[in-house]
Length: 170
Image (cartoon, rainbow, N blue to C red; front, side, top):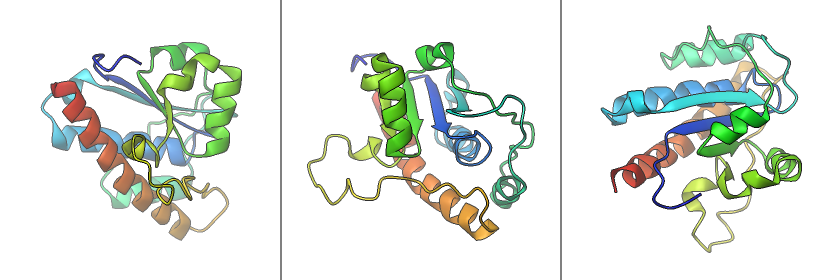
């Protein structure tokens, strides 16, 4: 991706598009709305590598997002597609395995695909930062796991939002 290009289309990817990526999508939309008056210029969406089409978020994801005053109840899962990936300026995955899958199946995504926990630190050399970059899949776990995922998403998405907004102002 060219450094001068404005970042407007952001895709979040997980496995089934019923937990992490719709949570990330909802959190990021809310953050942009709170951080910039140019919110409407952004297109934020999510998909899953092995997602079925049309599945609602898990009950736990809905509950945790509701606790954060974020409504993802209208979300329906969708599988990744070449067209979704091509229109994205940035693609964020939850795990190294998901990133690797995208790079192998769609090699042209390499310059614009990052782990959620990696993007903010992408130009830093500290190897300690690069440890534990995955965001765990809460599917099948109690709601506390979803809260932990939401907390990690909030921390990292806040950094991403600040970086993208700053980059787009240049």
